Image (cartoon, rainbow, N blue to C red; front, side):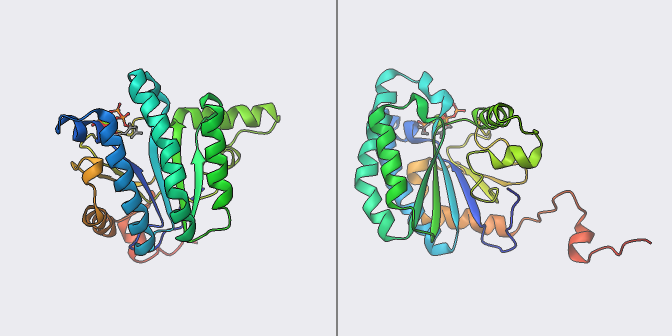
Length: 243
Ligand code: IPE
Ligand code: IPE
Ligand code: MG
């Protein structure tokens, strides 16, 4: 869906929460300890987004490729998702946050799937902040599943119809895409939807990405000129059409 942002505060912020493992390793802790700390950072981030007037937050929590990690880290992440859901959902519900999960649920256990559905159902009437958690998500998976759905229904495949079948069809495209942890790549996140997102890279590891760091990203975004293919002059003063 096309972006609607016209303000200095982005309407939709997307985050690749990277750096949990390094945060833990530097402290001689197991990687899963970094992911636990990452949940704390995410809790604070959701709250701060709401307070700053951001309307949609989309985070990358587990990629299609993260299955390739050591088995104990993968199972640790699955367990952490279950624990975090049980612990965090009541507060999110009270704070007006609506939770959506985006990704391929078919490979998740029955128990995890039930947890996701319950979290979505219990926050479904909220609207202060839409919080999308991309779990077992990949941008290529998203585009392929949308195309497959249209093909199965015998519908034409064009930009609009494909967009409507993507995992984030319920929200406008991200305005600001942040990646923490120092890497400058998308790692298969929101490939279609980031077409015109402003990119912001932070060297902070995700567990260290605090309110001030998010404010710095928002301030940086406010300085950007979003041209969407037009010229600067057109944005300042629309060029009159030549008859
Ligand atoms: C991101 O942190 C979280 C997930 C991928 C689940 P990492 O675990 O990738 O942390 P680094 O990049 O190894 O430090
Ligand atoms: C991207 O981080 C995925 C998530 C943050 C969930 P990765 O750590 O998996 O990305 P790469 O492997 O460094 O590209
Ligand atoms: Mg990483």
